[in-house]
Length: 218
Image (cartoon, rainbow, N blue to C red; front, side):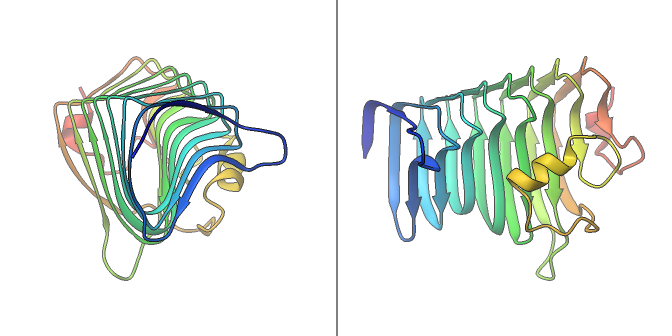
């Protein structure tokens, strides 16, 4: 149980705080700033509450395992929250994901992921939610999205990898998603209710011909 401190990156270290292996953690009222990776998790079970993660290259990196981020602020990073590698669970609820230069939330990897985005404000990022979850022989990843405001992002509210949406895609692959082959296609199951995806710079959804859920469109 970690609470009540500020962690700041130092030159030469890749992450401000990292947890690997069979770890269970509660992180509450912590500020993480100025690292290549702010918070990095692999194979852990972690619950983050009231954290402030800012000015990192990748704010929160969940490589695998189970991570919940609730009532928190993730802003002014290059990428706010990212996933990758072998699959797991990610829950982001009642949080502000804002002003992240490339993407607010970047979902990538080859394993099976169970993603929940509930009652978040995802705004002012380059792309609000960027999807690069590859096809996987064990099934399709499931993304549950309820009552999120995905608005005022510079480029797109939601964008798919490998769809020709974004000239910065190569950079985000390098930073976060290099394990995904460039020719893989996104294949996920959406469960959604009452999301507001509007007023994004180039388009709310890219590409427009992907089978987005009807509730993602006005």
